[in-house]
Length: 291
Image (cartoon, rainbow, N blue to C red; front, top):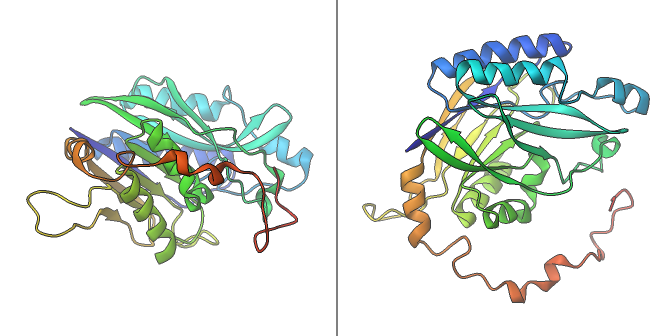
């Protein structure tokens, strides 16, 4: 079984209607390229731009019943291809940095809001998500268990670990930041230590503070037919705008997870109590940290 994720490394436009139009064209091209799922970079509805004033922030946020979200739902059904739509979500009186995945029938199968918001920067005006979720995604070749983390979530090993423990096989990771060697190494590590695939979609060079390099890691480091460990990177895009297909070999990954030593095979959770304590001590105390 193959699972093909189209990473839509696109330059944003101006306004919601143009964002939808650019995204629609890209999704149609991704479907022609044989993708099972098309993934947008972080907060595509605004091009990762959002005001800091509450009234303007609310006005820029959209709900599930907006033309933007309904449009991608209908498009997924028309193309028989799942679409991972990122957006500034209207959440009651608040706003969240969110991802919705519509399956090949246009049904909304996964909702996720960024848990680790960048409270040291402009995301301090956003409301963090409450948990990580894993759902089965139907494809033409079978179901794949997908989860999600968004950009800064990647920098916490707990994000991918919780998703692995909940059964994720592939993690979708929308992104909006410079993907340099250390951030790419984080993704490589998350995939390796949890024996799962990670597909990351970034904005291209030209979008401020972004540089492309959307990537995919399949997490399978050792194969019986190879004398040495293999590179788990199955895709790294360049800086330019484009649609890049990450082709995950699900059969290989599932066999690998049955025999290798990482993931949840030999963990000792009874020893990890310190990980769930909420205290923060020097040198990690930050005045702008939110609970």
